[in-house]
Length: 340
Ligand code: CP3
Image (tube, rainbow, N blue to C red; front, top):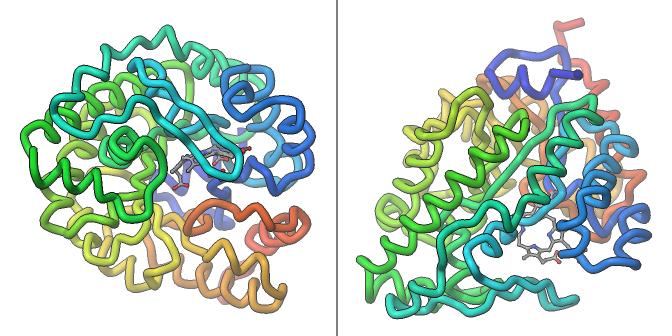
């Protein structure tokens, strides 16, 4: 197996900077669209043969250094008795939504059997792949936003209303989601994933004070209790005020978005491997501007304990596959001065 990605996760400097992309499988890719025309997204997630095929497409086509399981952060909610739908041009929908302490009963005991397809997919993938497989979940807080809002949100009014009016019940919700996420990730590790990424997509909507109270303790608990034979990546976009708060999170890797300078980030977060942090929309511009920014990131990455190249968020649907492929080649072939 090509292990450059895993070496970097463990803090070992590598011959070249490994690269993979969040949302590397998806609608920007004609090969994905071809299958997507026949099936809805949830069916694709729930059918191991399809999920395996889609996970492998970017490995074959882009030559990235790691695969990420094709699934969604909302899938485990189905094992907790909630219904999830993905509506075209609108996004995900979760029913019923949990808006107050009175609704906590909507969440049932986590039943792994209901999402057996995830573990079946992982078991097939680790036999087929020649690169490491990344499993994932949302952080309990990020998952809570979908459970409370009933889908995506811009302002998170219901989440914050719940949090600030019934903090005790909010903590109860977080406990439930933390336990479920822990079981879910542990089962992915048992099935064979080589690394885990925890998506904390919405942690950045919190003040540092509230991050410490409502978000971080739960992520920390999960990381501390997982069987630590695989590296753990924590993705936290919009982390401006949170940077120094994540130093004591014991994740091996921290994944950053483009809103923070990578070199600055290595000063704030010195004990972790850094992943990131190209603005995904640079891929829509000229090649010259793209490579200029990619080079800056590669160079800044040398100041980190180790560096994994990634985007600051998912691949945009308008991205050209050719352009992305060129970016991978550019990263793999990049020569740092003074090194052969
Ligand atoms: O990265 C990968 O290639 C692996 C698969 C993956 C998907 N979603 C596939 C997907 C992963 C890791 C996710 C995580 C995810 N899902 C997050 C966290 C990452 C982030 O973006 O911050 C979030 C917030 C979700 C929730 C979600 N799923 C939304 C809001 C949407 C709708 C938006 C959209 O682009 O349509 C989805 C749908 C989704 N998840 C698609 C894919 C490929 C599009 C489905 C389709 O084909 O219509």
